[in-house]
Amino acid sequence: MPDAIPVDSVGLVTPQTIHFSQPLQLSCGQILEEYDLVIETYGQLNEQRNNGVLICHALSGHHHAAGYHCMDDKKPGWWDNFIGPGKPLDTNKFFIVSLNNLGGCHGSTGPVSSNPKTGKLYGPDFPIITVEDWVESQVRLSDHLGIDQWAAIVGGSLGGMQALHWSITHPDRLRHALVIASAPKLSAQNIAFNEVARQAIMSDENFRNGRYLEENTLPRNGLGLARMVGHITYLSDDAMGEKFGRELKNKEFSFDYGVQFQIESYLRYQGANFSGLFDANTYLLMTRALDYFDPASRFDDDLAKAMAKAKAKFLLVSFTTDWRFSPARSHEMVNALLHAGKDVSYLEVDAPQGHDAFLMNIPRYVNCVSGYMQRVANECGEKQ
Image (cartoon, rainbow, N blue to C red; front, side, top):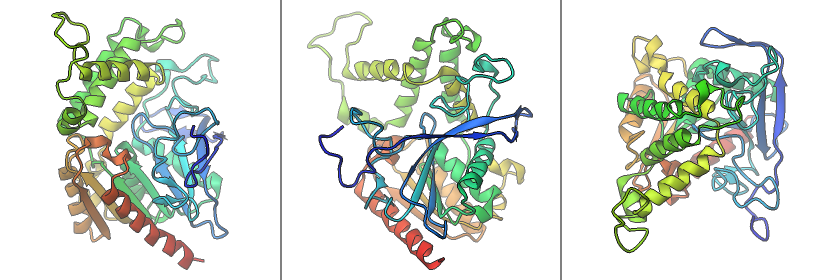
């Protein structure tokens, strides 16, 4: 935590837990009889209740998107550079809601939660969740907050898929969708990366068929390897080369299989750190939700047909070195939206950071989102 809270920070924030007792029918056929969603809010909902912005998180994200939980926090929320007074998602203009999705491991009901039917942790018995399920739970969250229509729904990566699905299934409930570094479905290569990550976790001897918490252990090695694989795909070759190159940790080769290059040290650190902060069953669930997302599959594999009922206006952003969700995937969405006669703006940012660029303070990207959101803010004023 800095000595003084920055003037453009939302400051100290407190998460809220919202309980839902109405059963939720899931895509897998199972029913969640009750569940909790953890959220954080920033800014104020106006009298017209038309300035709400929903933030949908990526694979390992959660509700803490901005500000600090206490004065001892070393870092702010994961998208703090975008959320706050005067920032692209300006809390002087918008009421911003960020949530931890169902199946998460940061307070919302998921594998680490207690199953009310058994009194034990769900663990591997927690049902498979899809993007469709997330959106339906978010609709109920909207109702709870008294927001009939979001000014905008914003998401990067897996979050962008949620924003896209909102526009298809609940077209009257959002006016703008910001789909950043995302795709209309995963490529075979992306599904392959997710499978390698899952196999790394499930092959860990401490995974115990997903019941590791019952047996007081954790599949740290497997989850760490999964994160290492994921982290490699989030960075570009240029970013990795610029940051690490072939720099050795020590001055000479040691001629063994210990850590010798700085990139190895970095990946091991990332893996070890993540394995103590995230739940393995949740990681399996989130990656499978990514795999399953394909809204065009119900419309003869025609994305333009899938987008036909959408009423929102769209901003899509991609990054040149993002090889996991490449600009070509955004082009697919832009072309489908144009073919469906939708209002769409598109920015392709020349950035060396790879997929992680969507989290970063890149001037052209920041200016674009700021300008677009000013347009959204102006509309909120007009709809009084």
